Length: 121
Length: 285
Image (tube, each protein chain N blue to C red):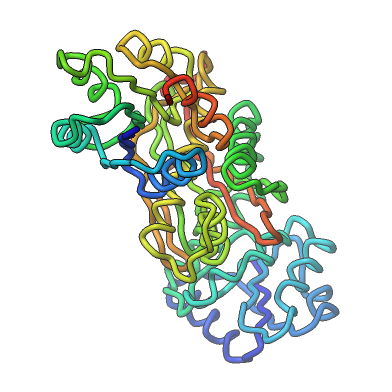
């Protein structure tokens, strides 16, 4: 399974990547913002799951999510938001825009693996 | 006004005197002290206590503790070189009001003394727990969840001028119903250890780009958590992308006239600070 991690923080990309490794997910592609995320999706048609931050430069996670859902081939691609935006209103906005799940930072490795479990075959 | 000076080098008395004279400050007495007994005799309610951070032992910190015991209202300022300013946590924890960098600019020293007097003698500002507690809870939660580190709150105070005491600070600008900033400031060692724990990797020995990025992510999470807790209050705000500043005793400006609350914490036996400056856009009715 190939997973795309989109976050402007290199630390956060590594934290998520390290947690994914512990649950046997080593095939990871990373991007620093929504623009890079779209390019990564273009270059890797075999990406099965996207984990995206919200607040990022150039293109934020919400706009990135909207762009993904606008593309016919990516309509059903699972996208999970991982963000510090912890308000209910943010969660609703993201779910309405097509997010499949929502993880609030800070998170424990257990929370991350639990939320990912339904998407990992 | 009486300036009481404690320094290992007696020439400090004249340096301070000259600074005040060059700024034409009149009606000021200057006294040099070198022990707790001498400090007891010299300190009065109209004093400002300047303590040089150059003592080779714990004298400087002990003098802060002593002066706060006998004259709690007398403001204490530490005089420290830029290289040593990052080590003044113990003095600040003991009750010092701030740090003035050496070699000092006369104007800066006089202004720091005036501000220290104003903040202790003047109107007592009320610390609004309504907005500070969410930041304290968020900080505790971020350290606990991301690093498995329990932190304890040591001190909380209001500051007009505040020089960050750490080597690296994560800064988040806040806008919206309330505007301001929140800053977390850590020593190099603590930043490297905490970011190492976040990553589940060995800590770095230096303030690398990765460590700085990690500090940015810490303030990002603190601000995000506090934001959610302050929803539907007049202190609600939006966050953006954090920035990181490094270098010992760096200064972070904040909105003029807005109360700036500094919270000192301890993690793994080392101090760090959180600075919150937040003001509702709409004044109280």
